[in-house]
Image (cartoon, rainbow, N blue to C red; front, side):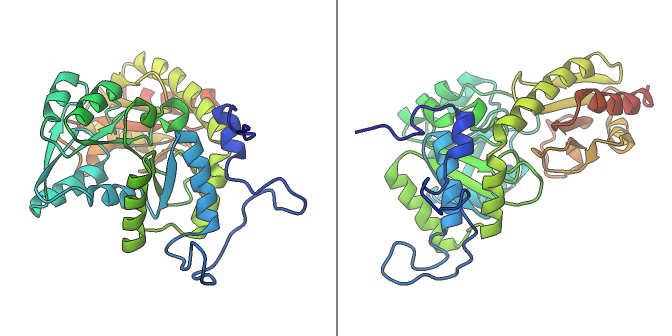
Length: 358
């Protein structure tokens, strides 16, 4: 068997080239938009809910980056819901006590309706997390966690969970496949909110799952086909276009975040800085409390006060403004999504706002 051109290239090159049409005369360089609700019978697609060439180009590229096969969904939460839908009646799901708010709320809703039992654990306490896996059907991980930016020992926990007979899911939205590959660390399923770093321009809603096991892939695709949690064709096209520059955006945003984390830690208005040492997310706690945190997020000119994250622009918000956020998240914590702007401009904007608070 001969190698394909993409077998031994770097992730940066893979992100640029995977999921493109073949290099043949008159082929388009980019996979075009396919606007079709139905197909001529006799093939694999048949109907627009089962597949689309534009989705599949995005799925090929993301799957290549993560080391598995990808399925695109209408949103990150649609992908989350599809996974949780597979948990048996009354079974236990272990998850970090600090997780994406939407994931926590879905777990709470399912538990309130008697569908599952959820067990929320401090993901930094590896021994406790491993112990919690003993009777679990599904073990959910985020690393870094949202918004506390805690880092999990994915490999150790995944090994213990699989030995206990549980499936392992890792939300890789913050790290992206450029900084972390959960399938190589023992995960069964990788979750992405493609709304965030993968697309990178704050202009679409989309989600994705990535798996290695063909039987699990078939089950998840069957659920997507049945429920209809499919992405729009334009969204998939834009997500793939964003994916082409993921390595450039992550490199620049990560460098900015590392520098800003140091400077923020030296400012008297900040009592705590949380930065895991990689990625472009930083969380800070304002020394003067929640009111100061709210004022901080309204005083800047470049930083935008908004939810969501992972775009080219820098955004931030006080997370406890959302009532569903765990009370163990500090009331004055501001989650910061560092963008690709000039770092000095970003710092000057932050410093001016912080100086006004001291």
